[in-house]
Length: 587
Image (cartoon, rainbow, N blue to C red; front, top):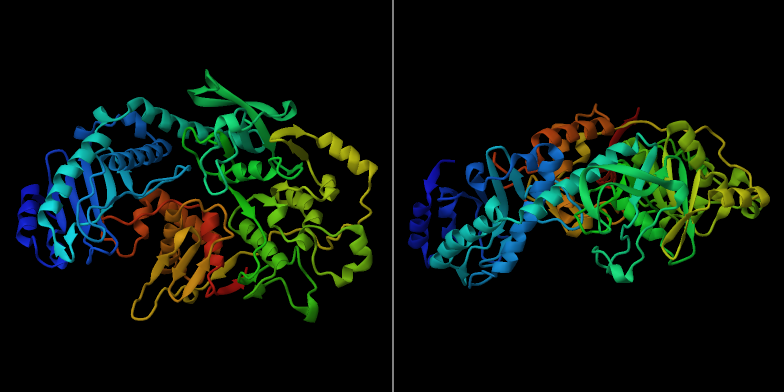
């Protein structure tokens, strides 16, 4: 697309002033201003429609962002995240919305929440800094407001660029600390494997959230800050010094949760689930001040729960469920309406298939009959009448055979003491290592139950999806893909329900997952590749080419929409919940 001068844009706006709203299509293109270039990639067809897609690009000679802030991939993603937040803050402060109907003058940029994710809303390269935003072009009714558009696209955007994209005008110390903080978190994550640990929780972390609907931290004067038990305490070196608890430090003390089987126990409302939730979210870096920025979890952790009603397509759940009535095989189990136990078994098997070796479970969201069968129930309902091998009889074996670690919140069943390597008790949000006490109790009070695992543990097979199972068409459209909030995808004629996929933390991840399913079906699914191979290939493409490749409607270099990087585990979960998914065979 050839570059024109900003004066040509102004002339066009004056020419179409007062005409029908569709005349705005004439301004699509790229324009050169003094400090930046403006790229109008998509123009909305109606003032009440989704706002137009624009990009503002500032050359590095003008922006002057220090190279050290984007010297590697981790730092670049962190810098892009914080610049997007700065841009959004300036938009909020200027309150410069134009008059007019519909979404006139609305300026939107896709910003993060408490997690720091790679996004399409900002791009930093050696040559330029680019913000991708959406702007509601001003209208009176359904007529063009040319002069309002001129002010918006020149004066207002220039002000936003100068205040949020030029290094000289930015809060430089805050931005440098933000980038360093994110790199510190990834440095901690890289050390977990060396320590044979699955997660680290720094002393002084503020784990509770402000309330039941907010993900922001609880006020410090109302919260109990985390303090690690001495037996689990380690010192974690950092790459960059930080201010922590009123001191300048180059390492943090905190609790390292070892690999193996870990129980988090305690009374109700004492912080068990709060700790697990922090660990669950610790697969992503967090913004400074979140309180959980130094709660860091191994990147392959997957939260597992029961999910009544989900579809399961040819998944091997035989390690947990076998000998069903009518001799139904569970080596390649199918169901359009899975029960709590069969869905939980499928969720575990599919997590392993996608590459996870760390499961997170909370008894409150698990199927009771899947987790446990006590001695009395075993006596009443004989083993040959019960198809479920309870999780308590597999969890130890899973680690021994496949190094599959588990962190489990358990407040009501001490039978797991026998299988546990580590037992952490939460009392008024304070953790204690009670492993020895739990083992003594287990020795003194035998459960009396029999182990019900009758076959050796196995990882199951690698399934091969068929391309015919990914039809995104609807009506006259070859591709109809939408998202509805963070937990629903409309894929062609079918909905994908993601409410039970708890580690999707941002609606823009959901949008990217929807696009990724379609991209994979068009470019990677060939009726030969297994699902893990498809996930491997897609991860490689996104890492090297970026999220822009996912948008099927985006021309090269244009605004790709509001997308955020997801993990392979959530993508696999979405594919497995597509009701048209068809698996060729178990291999």
